[in-house]
Length: 513
Image (tube, rainbow, N blue to C red; front, side, top):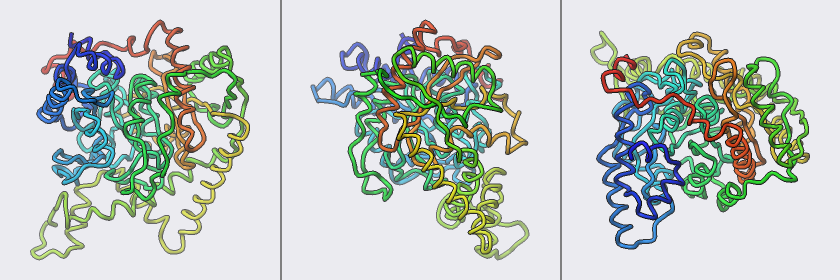
């Protein structure tokens, strides 16, 4: 029974809960049991809130028994990336500098999950302050890909994608600054959506790059993503960048699942040299399925995408160096006193704390960003990068005059081995080459599984991009393609993933060590 519960989609769980075939406590306990069985090896979670999740589930059961009209997802448990503030639960952003910090408030997104009656299982692992593409930069150790525990689950939100792929949670929240929802989805065989910038509130999200960050759903199906998107989306007066408009009709589009008559653009610049052969093969097969389903596919050129990676790695570090200045050892978080100094100054305490509390990747990006913003270099670097950003937005605008959505491979390769690219920052950064343009322009994007690469048997992903505020197009195309691919595979891709149920606590502890 536990296995049946954890293997169910969120939509299936919601139906079973509404029919009272299972209780919210049973659904939550089944996932907590699964976490206990396998997370020692996967390390998707940094903190599991057993008591809080079960208390929330019990409350939902009581309200349902009393005949209260509940949200469709009431009682469906969820995991939350550890970059969202959660009242009463530790929130570390994967960093030692925030170790043990317990926020006194909830992020708006978290408040919406609680209002919908969704028990929060815990907080998921991530690259420190969301800086990374592999979750290897977490101060608390890497998460592992359930398809192969020696490989990365993507990043920065590898914990959320791994939790969903390992059936530890039916739903999870991620954040996407340059691909941190979509790239993990691609390498774990899951679905990840980055909504339009401003479509989901950023209030309570620990900022990396404020003009790029966007929270969104991590799920196993497109319908589940639409259900979660409809919960967390919408205007928030607490967020000055929030779009004052209704949530796009994502649920209706996911249920319609139709591409007949749509014009779909294949981005010429996203899929050439550097893309693994199996990734390209599965992408091309997916595009042909769309053609067979009645879509018109054309090639589209976005010439300034070539400069997206360079522009992004000037804009992001610049904003990060500003946002991370608040971690000064004075107000909250870690405080380290410098050795050999009897009466240290505030500057000395700050320097000692930041040296001990920040990891190498965070320090690297702070230094890059501070340099790019410094006097004499601002116009040459940050200013020029913002001009390139404008050109990329114009490329999108021109492309969307010709087509309804754009498609590309989500990531250039399947999951690489843990440690393989850790000493080569540029090789790591190139994992986001296809996902970064959407963040620079603020347009929505989705990744869904496109199959297994023949050469290594690991998941590949196809990315769908839509115009700003037209998020429903992602779900219409995504759901249609998901159905076509499911027919091709004979079921959901994750049904082919290795079974981790054999892991005991001892085996898990050994694997993690």
